[in-house]
Image (cartoon, rainbow, N blue to C red; front, side, top):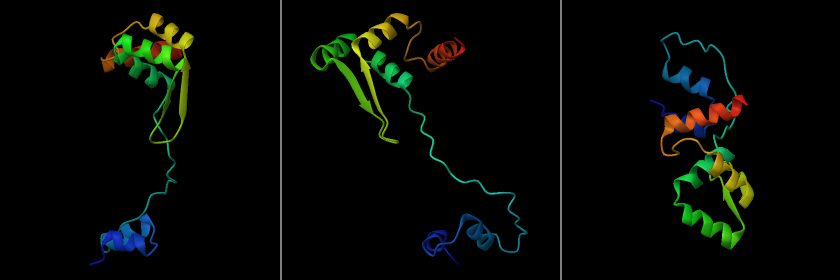
Length: 113
């Protein structure tokens, strides 16, 4: 039997591979989607990460670097936050960043405004 990996190496599409593997089962493709990369990173997630660190550590980074900079390992987006933005976010934070439910609610509240 043909292995999916070998079929891919031969240049077969996903529909071709499914047709070969499901031969005789009456497989009919309903449609095809073009995969598009979508990264879930955001400035809000960086801020959440900062809030999970001890405040002294964040203050040390700001004192030494003047800003916080992070790059998403998946999509490569670089996020930069200055001292004023970080201070404002710390002051406006109303929930526990370690609690996913609370944090999701905080993001919803911000997007409603």
